[in-house]
Length: 209
Image 1 (cartoon, rainbow, N blue to C red):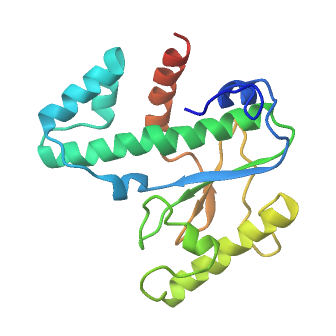
Image 2 (cartoon, rainbow, N blue to C red):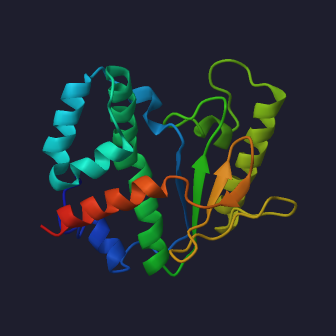
């Protein structure tokens, strides 16, 4: 956690946003479908279940229902997915929600999903249109041009939309529309809400202690 020193950071980030004391500027944020792909670690089914029960206590059964471990291989996948949900998915969703509730500026939320890789940071080469690794094919170049246009528009005006582009709706707690970016570009509902909601309940309970 960042150090609240009363000067650079006058309060914890959640409290600042809850009070509407964040910078009043447009916000574009999101996360990737496979955030945990690069962070998988070996763990047995027994150790995973024990770790979840120790960390989540009374919420453990809900967590294990969403991220089960009936085999060691499944435990590895679920451990990675749970870490990604707690560290990226839930955090980005929560940030978008609280900013949309208290900011005077617009919030734009994205979900990156691509057949070329969805791990943490996988969208960044497309944002900057700079291939990483193997040369891009025509499809990847088009994805890069489109994503680059959205980000450039946002940098210029605080709004990612532009003429001839698929509309990226403003995020609001009422509608919670997210922009799917990758092979398709279209607005839709929050894809991981079944995981975000119980994680939010757990985090709120932890914060209230």
